Amino acid sequence: MSDAIKPGLPADQLLALLAPLGGTKDEADRWGLTVRVPREQLRAALLVLRDGESTRMDQLLDVCGIDYLSYPDWRGQRFAVSYPLKSTVFRHRLTLKVLIEEDDAVVPSAHDLFRSADWAERECWDQVGIVFADHPNLKRLLNHHEFVGHPLRKDYPCQKRQKLSINDPMIDQLAAKLTQLGYEVLEMPVASAGLALTPMHQKETQS
Amino acid sequence: MTYKNVPAAATSEINLGDAFVTTTVDSVVNWGRRNSLWPFPFGTACCAIEFMGMVSSVFDVSRFGAELVRFSPRQADLLIIAGTVTYKQAPVLRRIYDQMLEPKWVISAGACATSGGFYDCYCTVPGIDEIIPVDIYIAGCPPRPEAFLEAIVQLQKKIDHESRNERAVIGAAS
Image 1 (cartoon, chains in turn brown, green):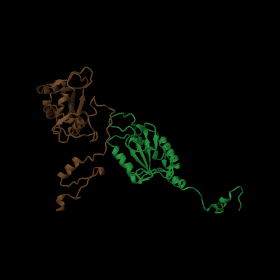
Image 2 (cartoon, rainbow over the protein chains, first blue to last red):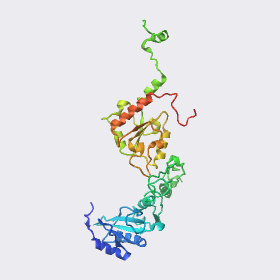
Image 3 (cartoon, one colour):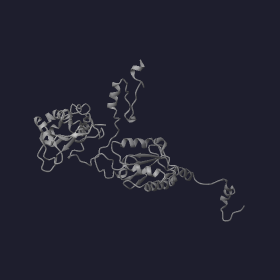
Image 4 (cartoon, one colour):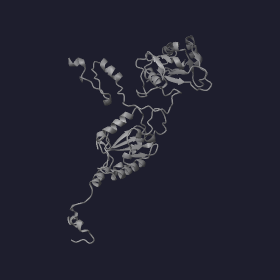
């Protein structure tokens, strides 16, 4: 049984916490609270919200890439990344938003601050093409490994089909983990899409 | 025992009585094949739920001899694709089809498998006939179990008109 969720901070206090990091209220968000922060302060802002005694925003719900190309009356940067945050302690939530230019679509990775950011950032890279600096394994999550381009960009021709010739066994992370645990992982033909462990027992038990 | 209006050449067979039936090999083989289809369900979406309805007791596909659902392509001769197929899945589907032994048939169930359905987008295969040959298409989103049964019956009719000699084996030297 968890304790009852406590009342959250009002929006102006949350804004005041982020003001030293350059956080400004995003007036386009009419339903919740969205705070724009500069890219350099993103990780600091995430940390403040995650670890602050009065905020405790311990859930990163998603990492969304936004493409503002052909958005009506938009004069800002082309891309944005938004980080919806939620607290399991207090009844408040907040979205951080970072605006980035098209020719420099790089954002620092938050995979070490929130574990959910790992796959969320991979999806964001896959679909919108935003690079997350220092991400340990920035490879495609949803599209196949022969896919070229980023389909949720507004200039991607949405009816363009890209065939996959052979599927990806997708065991690179598993193989790395097993190697770390002392198993020897053999290279398998891609088509077999399986995993061979040889010997079947760990190395320590063999000797 | 004498028969009227029977050509002389046939009388010798008639004299054998009820111990023999004369027919063609195709008729016997097709009779066996069409009444004992072993389906492999490639269910990826809601159409597979309707497939379950067809197999279960209310609609009861065993009336048509196709109730023995197998989950190994090596034990099945009817591939039923029920659901959306993405390009990421396409090599898997192709491989399953290749692993099935001849003779084999394919039913494409529902709008997604047949044409991509309403997924007119970057990731969905617009019809599985881009990857594998299809015998019967079922319309619907998802189709009713009766539509699945109709497809089985249509496939049985199709099998009835096949010939062992004419059936092309894909990849075999002629």
